[in-house]
Image (cartoon, rainbow, N blue to C red; front, side, top):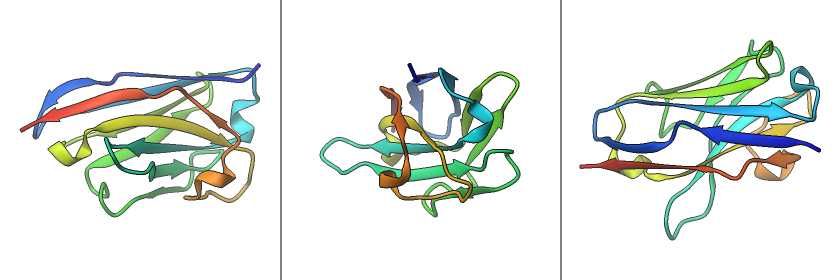
Length: 124
């Protein structure tokens, strides 16, 4: 059974930082590209960042570029999202997802497995 479990969310003031983690089990982690998505209240879920199987390629949404960084540790079956200079508009539930494809993707439909999400709240 595949499980993706996010952690590290919480309440932070604007300008602060958080690091999200997503621990994977039940799959060959190094065979999956990984992504982070988020859903703000009243909005659709949107792409945040993705990383290739080896970690050699990454892509970030324009809204977070320069502030967020995705990374992974295949020895720990974990993907991370370092979030700096947080803004109130970053408030959302953050989800990690696994994609059994060689090419990284921003499309939610490409991802095979999803976590339950972790809440990030940024106060002004």
